[in-house]
Image (cartoon, rainbow, N blue to C red; front, side):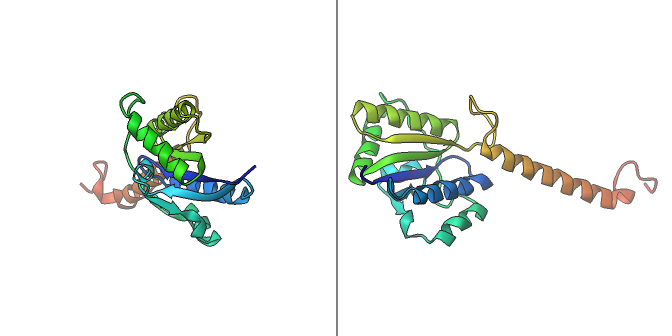
Amino acid sequence: MAVKNAFYAQSGGVTAVINATACGVLQTARRHSDEIGKLYAGRNGIIGALTEDLIDTSIESEDAIAALKYSPGAAFGSCRYKLASLEQHRAQYERLIEVFQAHDIRFFFYNGGGDSQDTTYKVSQIATALDYPIVCVGIPKTVDNDLPITDCSPGFGSVAKYLATCIREAAFDVASISLTSTRCSPWK
């Protein structure tokens, strides 16, 4: 089997988990160098593929990739750009396949919520229609845990932790000043 390249993009609202997921994808691709050559990341999500603004992650060190696990934001940029139906935006889908062909990309990893999962499916449909062999993998990331057929998505945990921490800190603040600052204070 000839070595083929991969494409990864981040989409939607960023959470602490999105870069950790990127780290996992990049490290796993590197462990399978017999099947995956370069892994390109799209700058600003799927827009990076449409505009052919690709980041060659193979030039990054192992330490830089590992550091993604602890990095906030979206390392490669994200977007909220929903591709409509294949009928409405066929030219954009064909553009994606054109870019994938130009860079010998045969693996497509799209990290995002429901719209991103839908885009991943549509890319697989157009690739089939155009007889372009590509493996399309939707990677869930959503803070509102609204993806069907999942128990919970990775973004849910980071939001739950954030909210729990905020509530705990607020409780400590209220407890530390409650003698004079609450309605129940005997000193009011």
